[in-house]
Length: 68
Image (cartoon, rainbow, N blue to C red; front, side, top):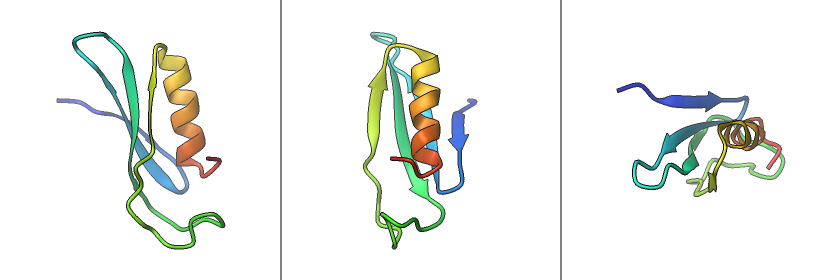
């Protein structure tokens, strides 16, 4: 099965679709390098739900690049 991943400078985020309601969930799968706000690499529990693929990718990209 294919996965939709957003891989940025500091994290990898997977986007999945709920088969029951069609909502999209962007969930951090792990950080790959420290940032100013995350000097170490603890487990990241960032996750958000979206109605629209464009929103999911935009905010997943922000997280993956270390903006959030």
